[in-house]
Length: 144
Image (cartoon, helix red, strand yellow):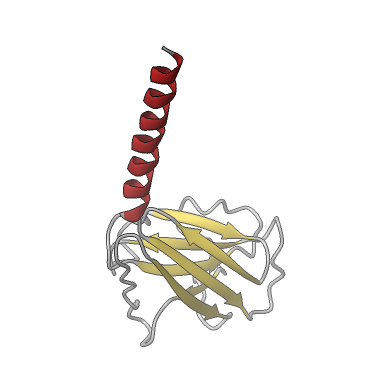
């Protein structure tokens, strides 16, 4: 009886870990290295918000995920990206009152991962893989 229990437990563990491996194999991950070179102070009260989009229409759509940084340089990771190509933008909160859940406030510095501004650059990543991109922005583009 004990031997049967151990064999059953071992088989169960094998199936569970196999299922996890298959699940993780299908996940797409995008890592974004952010560098803000503007004049604003970035800290816990004045964050940089990094938004992941599934469309190039950054003005009329909602981001699929948003993460924040509390330093001028840092990396955010979007795990389990559902749709590619994906697009990334940034916004710096100079007010200290924005939570990144609405449009950025007036005076926010904006950036996007792009080779030809104002067109966002597509980020494609295969299932089970990680794409890493770098995004540098400053105070040259601001919300009016």
